[in-house]
Image 1 (cartoon, each protein chain N blue to C red):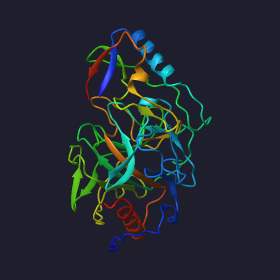
Image 2 (image 1 turned 45 degrees about the vertical axis):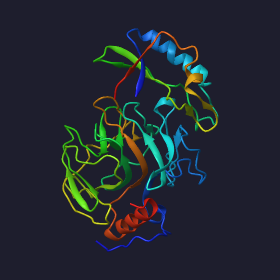
Image 3 (image 1 turned 180 degrees about the horizontal axis):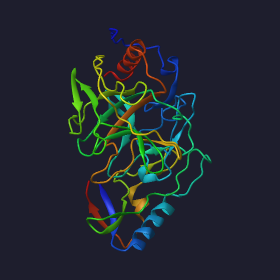
Image 4 (image 1 turned 135 degrees about the horizontal axis):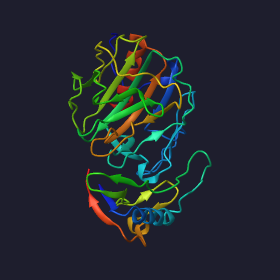
Length: 86
Length: 254
């Protein structure tokens, strides 16, 4: 699995905010029932000493109402590095 | 154990056996008999029992996806330990209040033997109560049984399951502290066993997590496909268990 990482938390927060905006999150398609608030939570990897989020998958993402390609989700995302681990 | 022969048709539903507290169906995760499109990420997995305890995940990257043709041609929900995919209920459920007996059935196809392959937890803010994994890590050194291909495997903490294999697993507790527990079965065979997979049940901030949350390199979350989970708020008798085994075998072709 590929993650977007950076030693500076704000960089990852900004990247996540951009992806969420690209996916039109937060949505409230059915309030209190079906909604997605954000693309990812920012976590910290202690061994690598980086903050990270999950990179959008190569085959895109869909919630059944809207479908996004990886490129669409990643548009305008800067300031983070890609790392892969399990 | 009552002998049961699987047939291609099944008319029993889990609701026909009383005390069904939770029912999450990977073939019908919306609970409306209208399956989502293949690959859809779901924010909610509907509870098809009368309890109506829908479980949710508001973070897109942590939502399980509905995948067709994954367990003997049947659809199921795909999880990821690395991405920490799980659903969680509200923290106010009362299902476990005063509960000291239960039966949990799970149909699962792990795609990895790494991590603990969590399936179900009942927890409060800081403690696991019922903690049903394919592997139980320390300090939860209890016993579980998994059966695949007709061979019972006692899992006491080692990684003994096989990736890309379909499992029907039962966890149960009958009464108080050290009662019978465990088990089971892709063959309809039931083993009776030892103490159990449970700490103190939550008494506040009570919620469930399916699969167990807590991903990462040493995490607990399921890598693989979750077909179905049924939770009964009492111990079932052998006839009832046989009926549910038959139901699962027919539904999932296990």
